[in-house]
Image 1 (cartoon, helix red, strand yellow):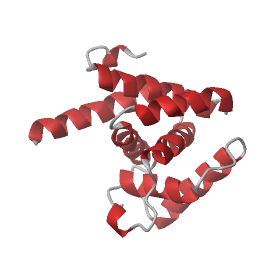
Image 2: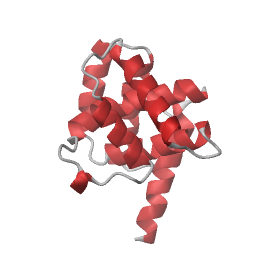
Image 3: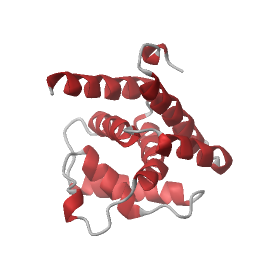
Length: 157
């Protein structure tokens, strides 16, 4: 675990540890490690918010000039195809919701079938792992930045 998480409250540390375990399992395409890591992530309150922050920052890193519809489609297709090799139940709709949510354009009230927290927890690490591979980045700085962004937002509320 990164030392940048040492001073986080226990619930935030739990999210960080679960996210690292799930993303690592996704990166190595290890279904035996992925299932318990995802269950742990799903049980952690606000894990979707943290993963959304990581996805947003990874998208910004991978597309410094901004994203257009084709970029989003390419990320969606690449992630789903890659994940389907070892997670055949990957749902493109959930990955799209994760992308739209990270970009701030998802309205759950307008979605006839919004994904539940368990689906978000199952698909979020797949998207993060894909974006990390694409940007050739490490998870820790993005995870730390997501927590810092959440903390700033809570201080302003």
